[in-house]
Length: 237
Image (cartoon, rainbow, N blue to C red; front, side):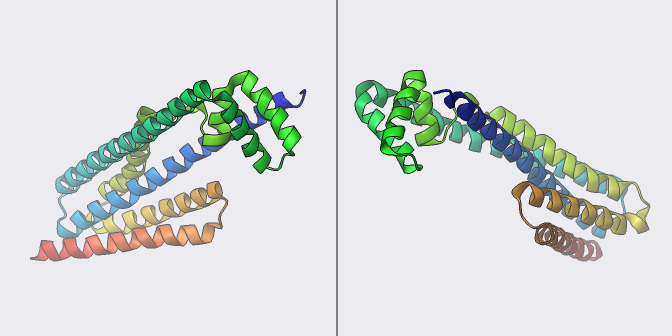
């Protein structure tokens, strides 16, 4: 019995770390989207015109549209996830009231399936049920932490901020230099930023950075090349 508390504390701590890593990874990906989409937009406009006002207008419009779209999408997605989690918890709460013995046996089998002997699994299930039956089933059966349900407002705000931070870089890079240096400076800045995002996302996911960097930089380069070509063609036409 003396080992139960540390094990539970460690599990909660691991879940908290995992949640923070997921948020950080989502932030990096949001910034990555902001960089690529805004860079493609402003480089395309720069290919069509040298007007700083036109580029600024397009860039700010793209930043606002992209960040608000990301925020709205995350809010809807996470709200649906939260609703599903609440519905699953409510079903589990009802089953615990209607058939507690069956739920105890189910929890025992779940723990047994994780490598515990039948006797130890039964004892652990009984102790967890006495302590907090709903929490035990939520964590073991559903993989949900009732104290850390997804918050749609947090997700929406985080996505908005991440996209905006990413979008500011290409916007500044295209506006600060003179007309002849706008596109080269923007391309260089975007490639460097995408490389950093690739390394960070790979490290967070425990993957090899080189492949992530190549994907990031390659995708951004293709996006800028296509939009610049189209913008130049439209500007000439």
